[in-house]
Structures are given as C-alpha cells and as structure tokens.
Length: 357
Ligand code: CP3
Image (cartoon, rainbow, N blue to C red; front, side, top):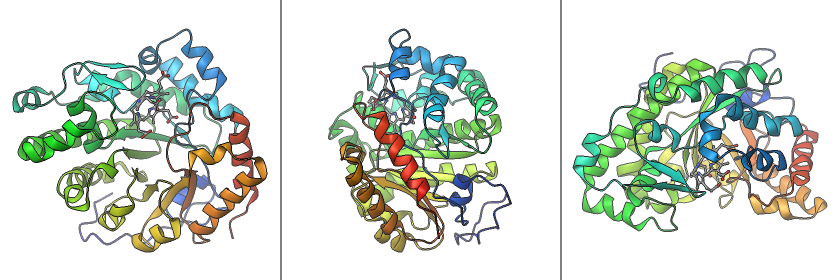
C-alpha cells in the first residue's frame, strides 16, 4: 500500500464481512458491538501471571516464546476481549541492540545514553537476528488465539524510549531526558531518528510474523510542551508511521497526557489515536476530525468503583465517544496490578452488552 503523500486521510474502505470488530473499528467501520481490550491486560493483576512470575523472571518470560505466548493468551482465556497484545516490553528491542537493561520492575539502563559517541555506537536493529524470540512469540500467539481475535504488535515511541535511555530509570519528571533535548538538541534528534528506524524495522517484522495491528506507546508525551513535542517527538513518530504504511495493517498511536497535543497529531498518518483518561473523548474526536478512530479512555482507577458505579463510568466514556464508528474501548493507561480481575470481567461484559447503533 502506498503512503498517502497528500496528508489527507484516506476514505475508509468497506469492512469485509467477518472482519473482527477491533480491526473494523480501527478503520472506522460500523461494528455489531463496541470492541474492547485493556492496556497491560497481560500482567500482574492476574493470579496466573503472578504464579508464572514466581518461577520465572520477567526477562526470561519475554525471551521464551512459549512462555511469552502463554502470558499473552492468559487474559483471553478469562475475558472475551476483542484483541490480544503481544507480551513483551518497550525496552526489549533495545536489549536486542546491545543496551544493558534490567527490570526492577521498571526498566533500568546500566549506562544511560548522554553522549554523541554512545549514540554513534548504537547498532541498527535487525529483528530476525537480534530479537527472534519476539517474532516466534507472534507466530505462536497467532496459532493459539481464538478465531476473530486479532493480535496487536507494539513498540515504544522514539521519544518515550529516549526518556528511559537518557534518564536510565523510571522517573516522574525525567529531568535528565528533558534537559538533554535543550542541551544537546542535535544529539537528541540523531538518537530519535535512530530509534525511529529501529522501531520501524521492529514493527514491520512483527507484522510480517503475523501481528494484525501495530501500536506505538508514547507514555511520556505529557512531559513535553507543544513546541518541543512538534520539534522532537512528532517527527520521529511520523518517520515510523511513514515506513509502516507498507505493512498494510492499522496503526495506533497512544499518547499519555496528550490533551495539549491532540491538534498536533490530527494529520499524523495513524488510523487510531489512543487517549488517556484526562481528556474528554468528544473533544478529542472533534479536534482529530473524522479521519481517525480513537481508543480509550476509562481511568484505570474506575475499576475500583462498585459495580453499579463502574457501569456509570463506562456509560460516560461511551457517551463521550459517541455513536460514530471508530471507537475502541480501553483504559486510559495500563491496568493497575492490584485490580480485581472480576472488575475486568464486569467491564468487558458491560461494554459488549451496549450495542453500537
Ligand atoms: O498486556 C500487556 O500490555 C503486557 C505487555 C507490556 C508490558 N510492558 C509488560 C510488562 C507492554 C505493552 C508494556 C509496555 C511498556 N513498558 C510501556 C508502555 C505502556 C505504558 O504503560 O505506558 C512502558 C512505559 C514500559 C516500561 C516498563 N516496563 C515499566 C514502567 C515497567 C514497570 C511498571 C509496570 O507497569 O509494570 C515495566 C515492566 C513490565 N513490563 C512488567 C510487565 C508485565 C512488570 C514486570 C514484572 O512482572 O515484574
């Protein structure tokens, strides 16, 4: 499929009969029910994940295709979710590029990247050589998924990866990463371009292995003001997306704390924008225009509400999303590890009960 050089959103093609609801919604096609999946749906809130983690460390899980596939499928056995997401981490391909990273549980980079020389020394990612276990996991998951449940492949967006690489560990403010943009803007650009090319390769390989949609996580978009976002983060995302159009699968860009940045992504060549809970979906849809689907955006904390209350919060998200096709229900960010799985069951069932008009 050729990239649309005009920048105008392509007219949605009719969804083929039998297209899974998640993929149809990505293309802004009507669906018989509102598709729903949960960010971080494979993970610590599930007792079966914790049982496996008691025996195997996180990295070993990500590097062992049989185990990573098992963890990917765990939430699908409990809940009738409309999509699966590959079990891996945004830092996994960077480990494949030789960056030493441990998880505690957030990623810790042994030698944070702060110099031109370190950036120059970063190799390009060759997925088949450097992360073959991820591609094998994609194949195993596809073989094990229920009929009609698509698999989402993912990567970290370049700026979010830069935050971890430069800062070296999770942080509230990511001060070293943000000051790096101002102190060494050219080095930052070079790093972002390198990461964009690596993630484009990585995601294309996931699609070739069987991933049916591709998602970029911009978890730290909210650290940037609109000017810096447009100068640093956005061009790198455009570069990844432009390269991925040829993969022929829906492209999703999730922005955390992106309410000040919505207009900046209105003409991004992505099919779906993932939205955190701080924004009103009606407002976001207006700002994005008809050419984008949206995904989100229930507050993960809402899963702690009493069942009747949870329904009210779901209703509010559905009302804000409106009846126009092109909404995928999700949380506004990852599910919290202390969430009751029964609340997730109630959420998924309730979203499905509410038919789409
Ligand atoms: O269902 C899924 O989404 C699971 C696959 C997945 C993981 N990480 C597994 C994981 C995905 C899609 C990610 C993405 C990821 N990783 C992001 C982007 C999404 C987001 O939440 O913003 C980010 C920023 C990371 C970096 C990262 N990795 C952090 C901050 C942490 C620790 C905190 C946490 O949320 O768990 C990790 C470790 C990690 N990645 C765990 C899991 C299940 C916990 C590790 C463990 O079991 O000890």
